[in-house]
Image (cartoon, rainbow, N blue to C red; front, top):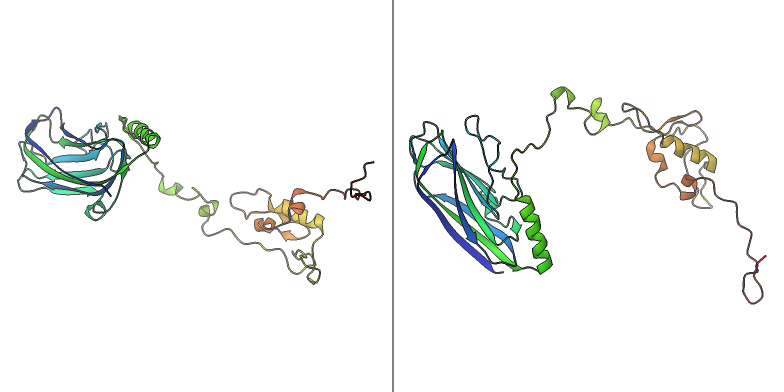
Length: 299
């Protein structure tokens, strides 16, 4: 294990926001031609921020192989243009620092959290790490005395040229900025049933249907000569297999009612011999006739 430990700081005496947000960034170079496995990550607030903003100052911190591109997605009802979500593949770590304007150290929430961040998490090939902070406050606010420290420990493993090249292409493609991200879908409470399994529409599982055991048409296959149970004929079994494959309505049980057997469940076709499922067995071919020397006689 070639463990590389990185301790970096971002210290900005003062930043005047353009609009309601500003960006600070720092680039850290890593070893090329290596797979970097993040072993530990942490963030620490070194100072107490100062600002003339009447609203709290919120800073989104990112660790990523490529520079972070802000989006049109809002951070709060007041602040817009947030960075990518923590679940984005290009984000190695995301932390949000909320600084109250009344003074004092702010609160920091991060992904992965401190417990997960102290264990191996993400891997990447790009030989750079960008530390990016998106500072949110009211329009044209002045934010002073920004100082944060970052700790990264990565296990650097030599990568093959082909693997390394493909990894760079993938990470560069993922890092392309999105102007607006919308993932998932909205489901009305009244439509929350019947989404995946049709049984959800009515609740519970589908009703179980069994082949009637009161008739002579019990479902058995005589695999042994001494098996005493009654057996189907091939035609009856094929008919039941066809019934079990019949499509039904979403609120009905699988399979079709047979006029002779009754309800035929869909599981009846499991384990059926291929000849019974695929259709009638072809007529037996004429027996081979062999010459004295073992060759097949041709007619």
